[in-house]
Image (tube, rainbow, N blue to C red; front, side, top):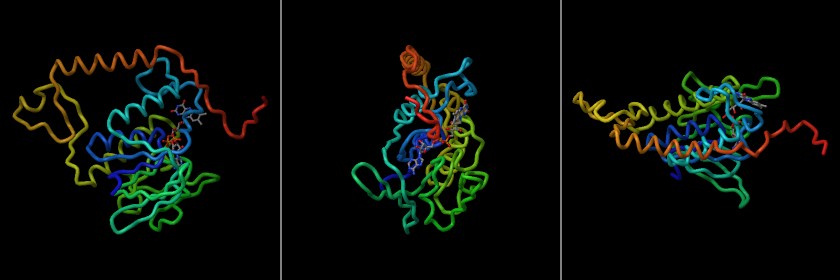
Amino acid sequence: MDTDVAVVGGGVAGMTAAIFTARAGLDTLVVDHGESILARNAHLENVPGFPLGVNARTFLSLVREQAEENGVDFREARVTRLTETDEGLRLRVEDADGESDLSTAYAVVASWSDTDHLAELDGVGLTKRGSKTYVDVDDFGRTGVDGLYAAGRVAEKPHQTVVAAGHGAEVALTLIDDSDEPFYHDWVAPEGYFTDRGREVPPGCEEISAEEREQREQASLERLREAFAEPQDEPPTMHPSVADDE
Ligand SMILES: Cc1cc2nc3c(=O)[nH]c(=O)nc-3n(C[C@H](O)[C@H](O)[C@H](O)COP(=O)(O)OP(=O)(O)OC[C@H]3O[C@@H](n4cnc5c(N)ncnc54)[C@H](O)[C@@H]3O)c2cc1C
Protein backbone atom coordinates (compact mmCIF):
# COMPACT_ATOMS: atom_id res chain seq x y z
CA MET A 1 0.00 0.00 0.00
CA ASP A 2 1.22 3.50 -0.79
CA THR A 3 -0.56 4.89 2.26
CA ASP A 4 -3.03 3.90 4.97
CA VAL A 5 -5.37 6.82 4.31
CA ALA A 6 -5.74 8.89 1.16
CA VAL A 7 -7.79 12.05 1.45
CA VAL A 8 -9.24 13.42 -1.78
CA GLY A 9 -9.32 17.20 -1.35
CA GLY A 10 -7.23 19.40 0.91
CA GLY A 11 -9.90 21.87 1.93
CA VAL A 12 -11.38 22.38 5.36
CA ALA A 13 -12.93 18.91 5.81
CA GLY A 14 -10.09 16.98 4.15
CA MET A 15 -7.27 18.63 6.08
CA THR A 16 -9.11 18.24 9.38
CA ALA A 17 -9.79 14.55 8.69
CA ALA A 18 -6.11 14.12 7.80
CA ILE A 19 -4.92 15.76 11.04
CA PHE A 20 -7.00 13.27 13.01
CA THR A 21 -5.97 10.13 11.10
CA ALA A 22 -2.28 11.13 11.14
CA ARG A 23 -2.36 11.89 14.85
CA ALA A 24 -3.89 8.44 15.40
CA GLY A 25 -0.83 6.87 13.75
CA LEU A 26 -2.18 6.18 10.26
CA ASP A 27 0.01 7.17 7.28
CA THR A 28 -2.03 9.91 5.65
CA LEU A 29 -1.73 11.51 2.24
CA VAL A 30 -3.87 14.42 1.06
CA VAL A 31 -4.24 14.68 -2.70
CA ASP A 32 -5.41 18.17 -3.56
CA HIS A 33 -6.00 20.01 -6.76
CA GLY A 34 -7.11 23.61 -6.85
CA GLU A 35 -8.12 25.49 -3.77
CA SER A 36 -10.66 25.36 -0.99
CA ILE A 37 -13.84 27.30 -1.71
CA LEU A 38 -13.10 29.07 1.57
CA ALA A 39 -10.40 31.04 -0.28
CA ARG A 40 -13.30 33.08 -1.69
CA ASN A 41 -14.35 34.30 1.74
CA ALA A 42 -13.80 38.01 2.50
CA HIS A 43 -13.47 37.73 6.31
CA LEU A 44 -14.16 34.62 8.38
CA GLU A 45 -16.24 35.55 11.42
CA ASN A 46 -17.96 32.38 12.64
CA VAL A 47 -15.04 30.15 13.52
CA PRO A 48 -14.77 29.81 17.31
CA GLY A 49 -11.66 31.28 18.87
CA PHE A 50 -11.33 34.43 16.75
CA PRO A 51 -13.36 37.18 18.49
CA LEU A 52 -13.15 39.59 15.53
CA GLY A 53 -12.78 36.94 12.87
CA VAL A 54 -9.74 35.80 10.90
CA ASN A 55 -8.49 36.03 7.34
CA ALA A 56 -9.69 32.86 5.59
CA ARG A 57 -6.51 32.40 3.53
CA THR A 58 -4.38 32.75 6.65
CA PHE A 59 -6.66 30.25 8.36
CA LEU A 60 -6.32 27.75 5.48
CA SER A 61 -2.55 28.03 5.40
CA LEU A 62 -2.33 27.52 9.17
CA VAL A 63 -4.53 24.41 8.96
CA ARG A 64 -2.25 23.09 6.22
CA GLU A 65 0.82 23.78 8.34
CA GLN A 66 -0.84 22.03 11.29
CA ALA A 67 -1.50 18.98 9.11
CA GLU A 68 2.14 18.91 7.98
CA GLU A 69 3.35 19.34 11.57
CA ASN A 70 1.32 16.25 12.42
CA GLY A 71 2.94 14.19 9.66
CA VAL A 72 0.38 14.53 6.86
CA ASP A 73 1.87 14.34 3.35
CA PHE A 74 0.41 16.47 0.55
CA ARG A 75 0.42 15.84 -3.16
CA GLU A 76 -0.65 18.44 -5.68
CA ALA A 77 -2.73 16.37 -8.13
CA ARG A 78 -6.28 15.78 -9.27
CA VAL A 79 -7.94 12.47 -8.43
CA THR A 80 -9.67 11.36 -11.62
CA ARG A 81 -10.83 7.86 -10.67
CA LEU A 82 -11.38 5.80 -7.56
CA THR A 83 -11.75 2.01 -7.82
CA GLU A 84 -11.91 -1.02 -5.51
CA THR A 85 -9.25 -3.72 -5.59
CA ASP A 86 -8.85 -7.00 -3.69
CA GLU A 87 -6.53 -5.23 -1.23
CA GLY A 88 -8.25 -1.90 -0.83
CA LEU A 89 -8.79 1.15 -2.95
CA ARG A 90 -6.95 2.63 -5.90
CA LEU A 91 -6.81 6.27 -6.89
CA ARG A 92 -5.90 7.42 -10.37
CA VAL A 93 -4.14 10.76 -9.98
CA GLU A 94 -3.18 13.31 -12.60
CA ASP A 95 -0.52 15.96 -12.18
CA ALA A 96 2.00 17.86 -14.29
CA ASP A 97 3.97 14.60 -14.85
CA GLY A 98 0.95 12.70 -16.17
CA GLU A 99 -1.22 9.94 -14.68
CA SER A 100 -0.33 7.40 -12.01
CA ASP A 101 -2.04 5.08 -9.53
CA LEU A 102 -1.96 5.14 -5.78
CA SER A 103 -3.10 2.33 -3.49
CA THR A 104 -4.65 2.88 -0.07
CA ALA A 105 -6.50 0.94 2.60
CA TYR A 106 -8.89 3.82 3.33
CA ALA A 107 -9.98 6.94 1.51
CA VAL A 108 -11.89 10.02 2.56
CA VAL A 109 -13.60 11.93 -0.23
CA ALA A 110 -13.62 15.62 0.75
CA SER A 111 -13.59 17.02 -2.76
CA TRP A 112 -16.37 19.56 -2.78
CA SER A 113 -17.66 20.05 -5.50
CA ASP A 114 -16.27 17.21 -7.60
CA THR A 115 -17.62 13.65 -7.58
CA ASP A 116 -16.59 12.67 -11.12
CA HIS A 117 -13.86 10.35 -9.78
CA LEU A 118 -16.55 8.17 -8.15
CA ALA A 119 -18.46 7.50 -11.37
CA GLU A 120 -17.05 3.98 -11.86
CA LEU A 121 -17.41 2.89 -8.27
CA ASP A 122 -20.46 0.65 -7.86
CA GLY A 123 -21.76 0.84 -4.35
CA VAL A 124 -21.37 4.57 -3.81
CA GLY A 125 -24.65 6.45 -3.91
CA LEU A 126 -24.64 9.89 -5.51
CA THR A 127 -27.52 12.34 -5.15
CA LYS A 128 -27.98 15.16 -7.61
CA ARG A 129 -29.73 18.36 -6.47
CA GLY A 130 -29.80 21.12 -9.04
CA SER A 131 -26.29 21.58 -10.38
CA LYS A 132 -24.66 19.87 -7.37
CA THR A 133 -23.91 16.19 -6.73
CA TYR A 134 -23.49 14.84 -3.21
CA VAL A 135 -22.07 11.55 -1.92
CA ASP A 136 -24.51 9.48 0.14
CA VAL A 137 -23.14 8.63 3.58
CA ASP A 138 -24.49 7.13 6.77
CA ASP A 139 -24.52 9.05 10.07
CA PHE A 140 -20.79 8.39 10.50
CA GLY A 141 -19.57 9.29 7.00
CA ARG A 142 -19.35 5.75 5.63
CA THR A 143 -20.26 5.25 1.97
CA GLY A 144 -21.55 1.97 0.54
CA VAL A 145 -17.96 0.88 -0.22
CA ASP A 146 -15.76 -0.65 2.48
CA GLY A 147 -12.98 1.71 3.50
CA LEU A 148 -14.45 4.69 1.66
CA TYR A 149 -15.81 7.70 3.52
CA ALA A 150 -16.98 11.18 2.55
CA ALA A 151 -16.70 14.39 4.58
CA GLY A 152 -17.73 18.00 4.44
CA ARG A 153 -19.91 19.71 1.88
CA VAL A 154 -19.56 16.87 -0.64
CA ALA A 155 -21.37 14.70 1.94
CA GLU A 156 -24.15 17.31 1.96
CA LYS A 157 -23.18 18.84 5.27
CA PRO A 158 -24.21 22.49 5.76
CA HIS A 159 -21.98 25.02 4.01
CA GLN A 160 -19.91 26.37 6.92
CA THR A 161 -16.26 26.03 7.80
CA VAL A 162 -16.72 24.70 11.31
CA VAL A 163 -19.31 22.19 10.18
CA ALA A 164 -16.98 20.93 7.43
CA ALA A 165 -14.06 20.73 9.87
CA GLY A 166 -16.17 19.00 12.52
CA HIS A 167 -17.50 16.51 10.02
CA GLY A 168 -13.96 15.82 8.76
CA ALA A 169 -12.92 15.06 12.33
CA GLU A 170 -15.94 12.87 13.02
CA VAL A 171 -15.50 10.88 9.81
CA ALA A 172 -11.80 10.42 10.60
CA LEU A 173 -12.71 9.05 14.04
CA THR A 174 -15.10 6.58 12.38
CA LEU A 175 -12.30 5.49 10.04
CA ILE A 176 -9.87 5.11 12.94
CA ASP A 177 -12.47 3.06 14.80
CA ASP A 178 -12.92 0.82 11.73
CA SER A 179 -9.13 0.37 11.42
CA ASP A 180 -6.92 -1.77 13.68
CA GLU A 181 -5.31 1.32 15.18
CA PRO A 182 -5.81 1.31 18.95
CA PHE A 183 -7.44 4.59 19.92
CA TYR A 184 -9.28 6.14 22.86
CA HIS A 185 -9.31 9.92 22.41
CA ASP A 186 -6.98 12.45 20.81
CA TRP A 187 -6.25 14.18 24.13
CA VAL A 188 -3.20 15.87 25.58
CA ALA A 189 -3.53 15.72 29.37
CA PRO A 190 -1.36 17.01 32.22
CA GLU A 191 1.08 14.52 33.71
CA GLY A 192 -0.65 12.25 36.22
CA TYR A 193 -4.14 12.77 34.84
CA PHE A 194 -4.48 9.04 34.12
CA THR A 195 -1.40 7.53 35.73
CA ASP A 196 -1.97 9.02 39.20
CA ARG A 197 -5.24 7.10 39.23
CA GLY A 198 -3.41 3.89 38.40
CA ARG A 199 -4.53 3.96 34.79
CA GLU A 200 -2.38 3.47 31.71
CA VAL A 201 -2.31 6.44 29.35
CA PRO A 202 -4.97 5.34 26.81
CA PRO A 203 -4.03 4.96 23.14
CA GLY A 204 -4.25 8.25 21.28
CA CYS A 205 -3.80 10.20 24.53
CA GLU A 206 -0.66 11.78 25.88
CA GLU A 207 0.38 12.99 29.34
CA ILE A 208 2.87 15.85 29.39
CA SER A 209 4.89 17.40 32.20
CA ALA A 210 4.49 21.05 33.28
CA GLU A 211 7.84 21.82 31.63
CA GLU A 212 6.74 20.25 28.36
CA ARG A 213 3.44 22.11 28.53
CA GLU A 214 5.25 25.45 28.95
CA GLN A 215 7.57 24.66 26.05
CA ARG A 216 4.68 23.77 23.77
CA GLU A 217 2.74 26.87 24.74
CA GLN A 218 5.80 29.06 24.16
CA ALA A 219 6.37 27.55 20.70
CA SER A 220 2.70 27.98 19.76
CA LEU A 221 2.68 31.61 20.95
CA GLU A 222 5.75 32.41 18.88
CA ARG A 223 4.26 30.81 15.80
CA LEU A 224 0.93 32.62 16.20
CA ARG A 225 2.65 35.99 16.76
CA GLU A 226 4.58 35.44 13.54
CA ALA A 227 1.53 34.23 11.61
CA PHE A 228 -0.61 37.18 12.65
CA ALA A 229 2.09 39.87 12.63
CA GLU A 230 1.16 41.19 9.18
CA PRO A 231 -2.07 41.34 7.20
CA GLN A 232 -2.58 38.66 4.56
CA ASP A 233 -1.63 40.05 1.16
CA GLU A 234 -3.58 37.46 -0.85
CA PRO A 235 -7.04 38.77 -1.82
CA PRO A 236 -10.14 36.55 -1.88
CA THR A 237 -10.68 34.49 -5.02
CA MET A 238 -13.68 35.82 -6.94
CA HIS A 239 -16.46 33.57 -8.20
CA PRO A 240 -15.39 32.20 -11.62
CA SER A 241 -18.50 33.57 -13.28
CA VAL A 242 -17.77 37.17 -12.25
CA ALA A 243 -16.24 38.96 -15.22
CA ASP A 244 -12.74 40.32 -14.81
CA ASP A 245 -13.22 43.94 -15.95
CA GLU A 246 -9.52 44.81 -16.00
C1 LIG B 1 -17.75 33.43 -0.95
C2 LIG B 1 -17.75 32.38 0.19
C3 LIG B 1 -17.71 32.83 1.50
C4 LIG B 1 -17.76 31.91 2.54
N1 LIG B 1 -17.74 32.40 3.81
C5 LIG B 1 -17.88 31.55 4.86
C6 LIG B 1 -17.94 32.08 6.17
O1 LIG B 1 -17.86 33.29 6.40
N2 LIG B 1 -18.06 31.18 7.20
C7 LIG B 1 -18.16 29.85 7.00
O2 LIG B 1 -18.29 29.11 7.96
N3 LIG B 1 -18.10 29.32 5.75
C8 LIG B 1 -17.98 30.14 4.67
N4 LIG B 1 -17.96 29.64 3.39
C9 LIG B 1 -18.20 28.19 3.20
C10 LIG B 1 -16.94 27.33 3.41
O3 LIG B 1 -15.92 27.81 2.59
C11 LIG B 1 -17.25 25.87 3.03
O4 LIG B 1 -18.41 25.42 3.70
C12 LIG B 1 -16.10 24.93 3.35
O5 LIG B 1 -14.91 25.36 2.71
C13 LIG B 1 -16.43 23.50 2.89
O6 LIG B 1 -15.33 22.68 3.18
P1 LIG B 1 -15.00 21.37 2.30
O7 LIG B 1 -13.76 20.80 2.84
O8 LIG B 1 -16.22 20.53 2.21
O9 LIG B 1 -14.74 21.94 0.83
P2 LIG B 1 -13.48 22.82 0.34
O10 LIG B 1 -12.96 23.61 1.49
O11 LIG B 1 -13.90 23.55 -0.88
O12 LIG B 1 -12.38 21.72 -0.04
C14 LIG B 1 -12.50 20.89 -1.16
C15 LIG B 1 -11.10 20.65 -1.72
O13 LIG B 1 -11.11 19.54 -2.61
C16 LIG B 1 -10.29 19.85 -3.73
N5 LIG B 1 -10.69 18.97 -4.83
C17 LIG B 1 -11.89 18.93 -5.48
N6 LIG B 1 -11.91 17.94 -6.40
C18 LIG B 1 -10.70 17.32 -6.34
C19 LIG B 1 -10.12 16.23 -7.02
N7 LIG B 1 -10.79 15.55 -7.97
N8 LIG B 1 -8.85 15.86 -6.72
C20 LIG B 1 -8.16 16.54 -5.77
N9 LIG B 1 -8.67 17.59 -5.07
C21 LIG B 1 -9.92 17.97 -5.35
C22 LIG B 1 -10.55 21.33 -3.95
O14 LIG B 1 -9.54 21.94 -4.72
C23 LIG B 1 -10.55 21.84 -2.49
O15 LIG B 1 -9.22 22.14 -2.07
C24 LIG B 1 -17.87 30.52 2.30
C25 LIG B 1 -17.87 30.07 0.98
C26 LIG B 1 -17.83 30.99 -0.08
C27 LIG B 1 -17.89 30.49 -1.49
